[in-house]
Image (cartoon, rainbow, N blue to C red; front, top):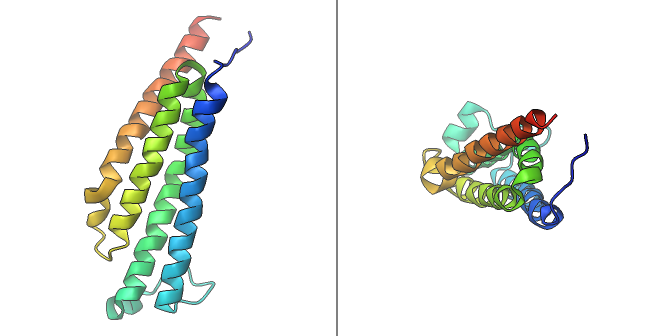
Length: 149
C-alpha cells in the first residue's frame, strides 16, 4: 500500500502546523513576561498558593503558565490528527489547526487577565471544535485507508 499526499498537503497542513509553533513561541514569551513581573524565580514552576493570593502579578503568572501547559497537553492531539486528516482533507486539517491556534491565543489572553474563568469566554471552548473535527476527520481517514487494503 502506498499513500499519495494531495498536492495541497504541504501548503495547507504545513501552514496549520506552523501556526501552532508560532502560538507556542508567543505563549513562552507571555509566561516569561509574567514571570518577570511576578518576581517568581526559576526553577519554581508556579507561584505558591499564598504568593498568588497576595500578588495579582503572581496569580497572572500562574494563569499564563497554566494556559501554556494546557496548550502543551493538547499539542500531540493537534499534531497527529492534523497530519493524518490532511492526507484526505488537507484544507480542512490546515484550517482547523490554524483555527485552534487562534482560539488558543484568545484562551491565553482571557486566562492571563488573572480571572481563570475568562479562559473559556475568550476562545477556550472554540478550540475544542477544531479538536473534535480533527479527531473525526483523522479517524475517518484511517478507516478509509484500512478499508482500501
